[in-house]
Length: 189
Figure 1 (cartoon, rainbow, N blue to C red):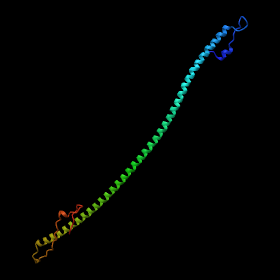
Figure 2: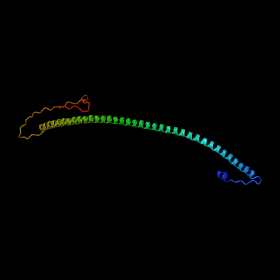
Figure 3: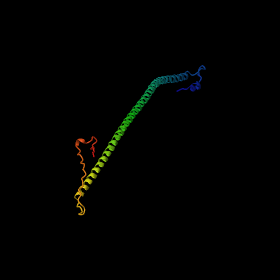
């Protein structure tokens, strides 16, 4: 390819006839320049068409970039919304679980208090029953002592005295219908 420098430096020989340049050399040089100019114009046309395609691609990429940016922003907003909803749901679940736990604890505390009262009532009834049994046993022991004194051999020096028997209180039998709701029997002396 001929450069501008080549054109400036090109010299022609003087024609042997008439003092001008050699026409054949000038024509040959002009032909080279024309060929190079044609090639340059074709290359320029090809480059312009490639540049046009590239410009179109750049515009397409810019529009895609804009669409991608919009998509990213939408995705970020959606992610924030989902996260907020998830946090709210989690908070609601925790609050509900806490309420249920509080209710369950309150129910257990009430049941525990009720059962402790029942236990105290049963212990008091048992103690009362045992005291009654002790009293009855003591009464029976006194009766047995009195009976054994009657049948005990007396010494010959002592006159026989008839002792008066103390009336023995018989305990009334407890009927099944008299059993209390808490499972204890009423005790009567």
